Image (tube, rainbow, N blue to C red; front, side, top):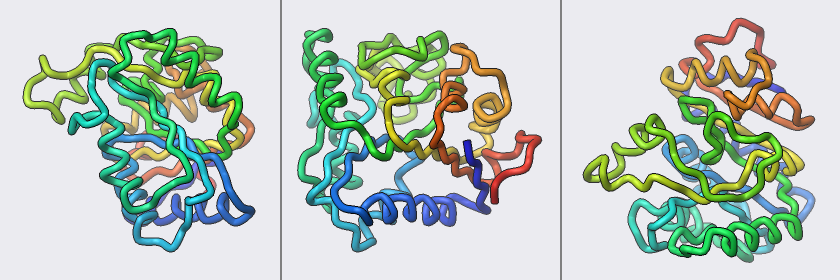
Length: 239
């Protein structure tokens, strides 16, 4: 795991852009994408760049169960608003949160992941150490599935909804095992509220109680932080 620390979100996101430039240099690729406030600046950098994804595929990490793709808080809506409308891909694979048949939805998505292995997977990290929606206690071998969200995750996401009662209580998500099958992983974390989770991920023991700690066992992980998210780390960063 290589850790790079930058002064602020802007310079960190510009650095993250380089990984997409490098990934596209050899031709069409498969990209795993994430949502939320953390990658927004990176997506702005990508949209402003001359990068061409028209021969590439994308897979999104997760989606709320119960939300139609057109819902303003669905991750499908987020991705089109922040990236896909300006940077089209050959095909975008997104979980359908409106499909009530979880076995059908998740097994089909996992089959697609096996057919198109991800070259570069983008991740954020939750305050409780989750990646995707893999909450503490998730198996490191887990595959795409429906996950009941913890109260802390629901609370963290409630700022985006009119009322906490409107926040979905479950999500479809790539499992940790699905994520670890990616050839390369790029994790972004910004802000002091992520500092404890970052420390546990980078310097803590590998444990299912900190889902992101599984990344310590992957051979090609880059972590990009701002100073605030790195504030609790005791070791030296790579840059």
